[in-house]
Image (tube, rainbow, N blue to C red):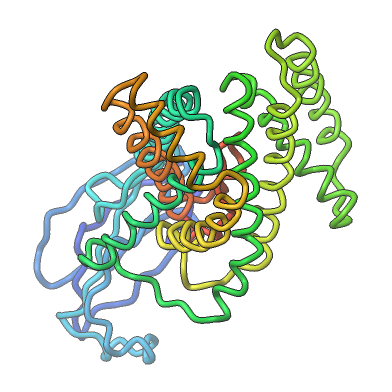
Length: 374
């Protein structure tokens, strides 16, 4: 519990550790002073004088077995203990407290998560484009990305590196529309990157906030302030300008990015509305999503491209690139899963949604907990 005392000028005198005994008096707060009771045993004291607002934080509570009879002074024994700390308003935490990370430390941690996600995403895009240039089969490439992530998580669960989620049929039924939208968005983005430059695909996909607002407005009936609509104009204008001035413009690549935008918007909506309150979250949530998306995508990939095309293209790529092509395929599959999981981990431990970011994005998750002061 944290409270704030604002005084014109106050003087605080008290021990860091306060012991209650049977003859002690209760703590009294007066308008102009803070005077804790004294104990029989002398303890080291400190004096603080300040004109700034003062925050008091309870750092630890000892044996309060008789809290119900708080009014009774005789109900407290010498084993009852309270530790208190104080800090000025311009400080973020109690110095020497219970080890709770400061706000600055939390921001640094979130920054590290974002930097890790960005670095892994860059590596994925590099290897993914190399694979698509040498092996233009985006449906198989998308399938391999999901298969690799699913295999990694299954091994983690089998070896108990990660705790396996507890799911039921209702969970998978609720997850199904999310997985369908995720599959469409993933394949559409990969098809787009196989036809145009990666930079062009990401520029078009940066328009996803506009899709999100428009879908929420015209399909879900949600309204937004006028500044929100005005903020979309630069995004839409920038995407249109990039499309018009693209030297190697390809309609399939453009439509793939647009379809991916729309699919990921519905994925976030389905996840937010359907998966809210579910026990599975974080890394396990995305692992289940990958497994279900893999099951949905595999038959369509076989129907669209097929093993015969894959085998012929594989031999061609190996003859032109060499054995390192195998590493390219493995790397793009591994890093696809890693960068998604890095963002998933940060979103499940901090109060933000991955939909705050442009492509690639993950389904909206309710954080497992939020940082707050009570």
